[in-house]
Image (cartoon, rainbow, N blue to C red; front, side, top):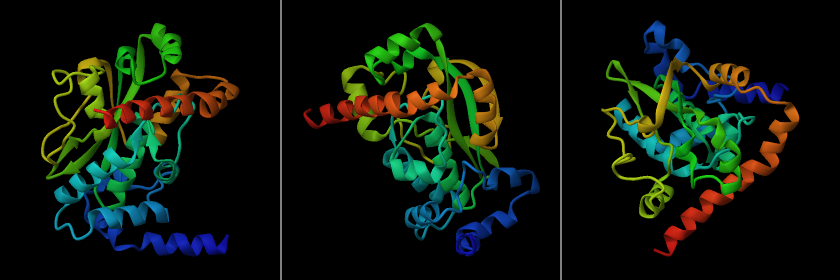
Length: 255
């Protein structure tokens, strides 16, 4: 235990975290480490150091973090019962809107940039083709599902920076008509304007909460399921969803 504490103290003193001390007090909650947003973990700190390198301003840091989170954590539905720490998502290399957003926020906070999480409901049809057919048949009757994206605080304002679909998956999804350029014209972000990918499918807006921890409490109340079902999702459904999106990516290699 002592060794772990010493390591935690070392990481918390990292230069990446010094910027947080100069932020406005009302933004402090959006810079905190939480059980899920464990940005002081060495793996998150190391990734952040590598990604932002010698960036000279927060906008440049945020852009580099966006592209890393977008493309290094490949999109796949993980299941309603799964909420992993950012450090675990980094090791898995896959994430859905919740876990991927949590990872993205962890990198932003590690770089001293305030970040928060937006929650909405979207039409379930957005998942068609992105998840196995048998699973879509099972969830189609629900009509709606939760969706999340990250927002960061730059130049005195909050900016949405949704990196849900990795570039490899998006290119094939456009080619095969799983999504269209009319609905999602671009997945690139300039660091200045809002990027929200699933706006066309939005049915209800729940606003913002600081962290995935806050949303997960509400999420589980609304979508309560027995622990055994959550475990079943983790060991069967999530791997099936990863295989589905990987098949889509592989088809892109044949184009």
